[in-house]
Amino acid sequence: MIEYRDHVDGITPRQLIGFFVGWPHPPSPETHLEILRRSSHVELALDRDAVRVVGFVNAVSDGVLSACIPLLEVLPDYQHQGIGSELVRRMLSRLRHLYMIDLTCDPPLADFYRRFGMRPSTGMMIRNFERQAGS
Ligand SMILES: CC(C)(COP(=O)(O)OP(=O)(O)OC[C@H]1O[C@@H](n2cnc3c(N)ncnc32)[C@H](O)[C@@H]1OP(=O)(O)O)[C@@H](O)C(=O)NCCC(=O)NCCS
Image 1 (cartoon, helix red, strand yellow):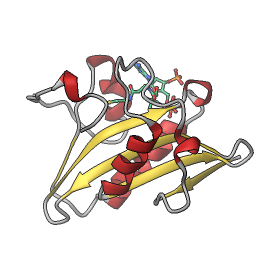
Image 2 (tube, rainbow, N blue to C red):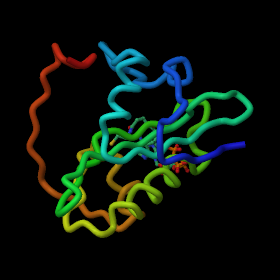
Image 3 (cartoon, helix red, strand yellow):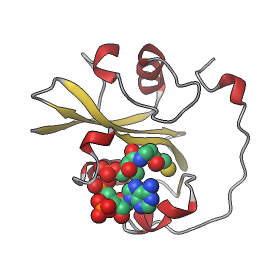
Image 4 (cartoon, rainbow, N blue to C red):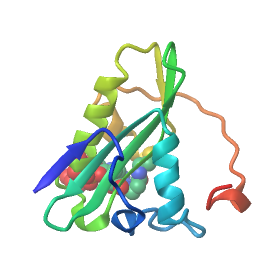
């Protein structure tokens, strides 16, 4: 049974184990929780039976004009069940009053995001890999 929440109240680092699959230097669960706490918006998917977070998306917004969506992930065992789509739908609904909603993704994921009315753009970025686990 998947439950969705828009806050991290009561969430512990133990419930966040398993994310950042494939990252060479992933943030710890403690750092992950801090990321979510400091985000302006979060949406979580919890497996009530396993008492763990199985998917999340966060946004960082000025609350007036713009927001960016830095992270979206669903644990591998829970993918392809519509959880990622539901997280994106919920997040975009909360941000719909804003002018700009931006995210970056690898080209194969563009069709996933197109389903929600997003369209491709050209982006620029910096990645400080020595800071990948958080600073
Ligand atoms: C992207 C992600 C969040 C989707 O979560 P999900 O719960 O599986 O999403 P849904 O079940 O709602 O939709 C799945 C669909 O998304 C698309 N999709 C998911 N991952 C994809 C990928 N790597 N490449 C292309 N399409 C992808 C497929 O169309 C897939 O359809 P299918 O289930 O018929 O195969 C999940 O695959 C994930 O966590 N990936 C690793 C982290 C990541 O890439 N995050 C996005 C950063 S921009």
